[in-house]
Picture 1 (cartoon, rainbow over the protein chains, first blue to last red):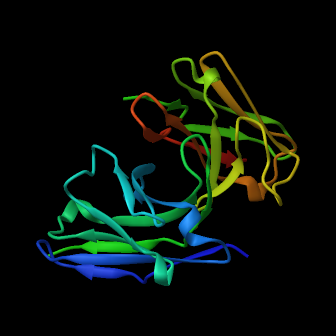
Picture 2 (cartoon, one colour):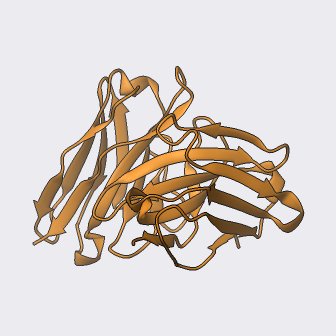
Picture 3 (cartoon, rainbow over the protein chains, first blue to last red):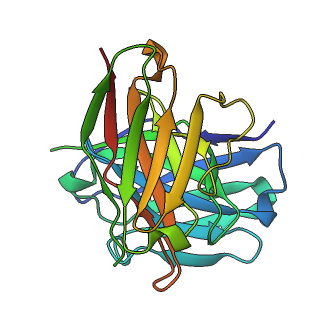
Length: 119
Length: 108
């Protein structure tokens, strides 16, 4: 059974750093992209970027380029989403999803990680 | 960048049929995927490649895509179908993955 298990909820202050994770089970982790998707409170889904764990090829949405870093460690079937300096506007639920690439869908999703940034 | 436009909300009585649209320039030439998101839950893929259903998705869910509009149809709507629905495509010209703004389905 394919599963993506995300790390737990985080509460941070503005300016702090954060790294959240997404661990894949039940499939060949290095053969699929992992996508990250943001959902701000009461809002829709926004694609942030993708990483191919097999070679760490990474693509970002222009809206997120430079503000977050996506990485992966295929040896432990885990992908990461990282901030060096959080803003209040980063408060959201962050989902990871499995993705075969290009025209294919996001077929399995993690349960989401709630990130709250508040002073 | 490519824009997908969805009606913000739609309501339907149980047992009826509801159609939700996703508009985009020449979207008929793209593969459209649909996700259902119930309150407090992660999204779930319900239609991929315009009209195909993943394993476990009821036949009541169907999709079509032509011209500038893709459509998700739910037949014999049930109370448990109440959710937000999002369409999504890959914009090959910019290599971006794009979501529509979502449609909130209310079952009366």
